[in-house]
Image 1 (spheres, rainbow over the protein chains, first blue to last red):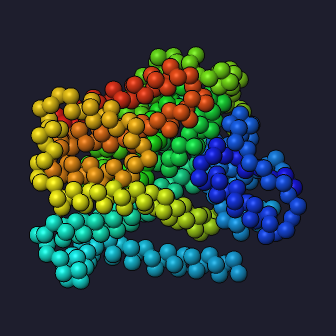
Image 2: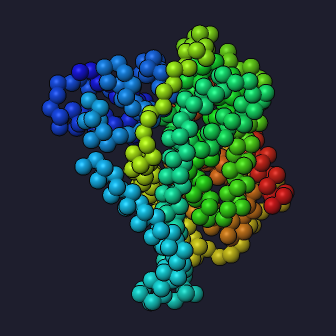
Length: 75
Length: 348
């Protein structure tokens, strides 16, 4: 599974990355979590509010930091 | 299991909200009792005033920041920025688009790290630069923390004046910057996006289908998150404000920052631009300045500059604009804030 955390480096983006990693670990699935900080790349996903979570190329969450439970449900 | 959890959250909110309102209503007598009875400080002593002011204002502001952040979060989940973008790209609005963009900027919680993706998102949809600027000016200026602080320290009238002029500033500033045809000063890659802009690119907006009770916990959590983030600054600012309140004599500042000094407003505004991280700490201090004789217009202009113009934001904007455009953008807002300051001192 390919997971990307989109964000330019603000506090919320960092916490989304942490929470995502935690969710992946707790679920014990094989996934690659990557942080995308480059603006041009972020914009190709069409999000206007960061942070955003992209799972297998699809924007799952944008503009907020969901709970670990919610990410587990999404995965 | 899930339903149970949701119910318990609703019940928690149903219990907590009236409790917060009751606390808010009886806060002054409560704090009075604490300072004068429990701490046995005298009401007319310096330390009595300091302690009373500190606890009363801290608790009041924390409650207000929490309530207003949650309220704005609520508005925001129902009117996400994608919806505004679609509206602006698909409808003919005859100039009202500046007002809508500015109003929207006022109700969205501002995060400077979101302003760039948002800027590009607007450009992608073919929204004119001026309208984007209208949003960009108002968004930091009228935000949940500033509104809560103004409500708590200056009352609803000043808050209304502040918010209205922030929105007005966005509309006028955006309109003017739009007329200047500044698109050639955008960063090259942004101009590239602009040439390929098409409302159809962005039309496929789908909102998250969540019910109210599903959204609420996240909104409350976000509201609380904002409180936690600004809390240290608020405590520090109120602490300094409380000390000044207790020890600085009345009319101390009026000698230096009074109305008849023409340079007071420009000086205050220019001094304010580099002060950013401390925005939530600045308002409680300024409140004391006003209480000790600084004219309200000068104070509002100063705070608008602190909150609305920041160097970190300028460096972020560098990713999408050339320095020249950032300079024009900041100079225009600075000028307008100074003019507003004179206007307030004249009418208030």
